[in-house]
Image (tube, rainbow, N blue to C red):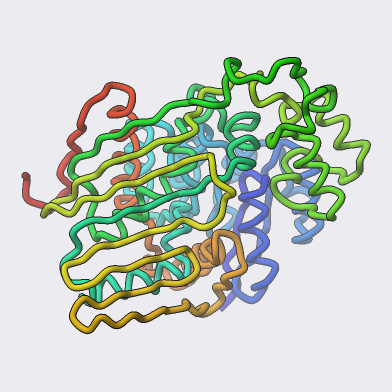
Length: 424
């Protein structure tokens, strides 16, 4: 069977990361074209994948105008630039791997789903948490009945103080009007994951959250607009000089430093911090992304769940507790611990990689797991390996949008009943 041929639309960290899987599996897939407006990023993919010069373009529309020239496309553009290429490539018959979120609003999400269903092509949304060895292990425990009936779930996303500062204060996802709200940009992963673990989308959601810390009101006395010029930077945990400079000194030439500079030199970093968005004081940016948020959910049948997202952690894997009628589960993103109420016994389970999914890969093996599933589906014509198809992903996005409405309006939002389920 010949390798699945792929176009990469957007060669940022996500697009390049998915393309990296191809380099490790040349017998299964090949990147034959890249569309990326930044010449440096485009050139890197051309060199790594030996892409023909005519198949490296700045604008994806050039590929769309040529007709179908590959089996599938990886769409990894910015959040608000997903719908148009997805519609265009679906109409041409491309199967699509689409980085999350699908789109920033309900109408666009529904249009996207309608486009792929009308074209009869497969869609895999980048909800990579569904594809990790850890999730597979945890889901198997839940589905086995060892916990009895699930009563409630607690789930925490510890974003990390540095990640918040990088992506959601200084970075591309700092504003809802130019990207998407924080819950969609960062945590649609988590609401999707919760519906996957529980086995159905939530019926009702409520939420609270706000931007509390990264505001001018909390700016230290005497702080400068840029960290390179700031007299109080030595006492600031959010100093761009300390964070990015530390990565450079340690030779960590990857995300998030790779977002700030392409040339990994002190001179390039100094220039970027003096002139670009990532050198700004976190208390003097134009951000409105919340830095902590909670969502309460009720599922059909009465299962409840709470989700907490907070910037104010050291970062690390998500943490989950599942409370059932016969047992309790603790998960820390690495291991799963199960306590049996009847016997009093405990079992700790360490997930093992399966197939080509490596736990050291991005998102705990989720990036590799998604690529593995998508390429298998395209190669065989069988969508079964895809766990994040159009309808499942739409349900998760509708839950996120409802939770954000609940936060903004102080309401409890009721979600539409999915097709095939009885109305409440």
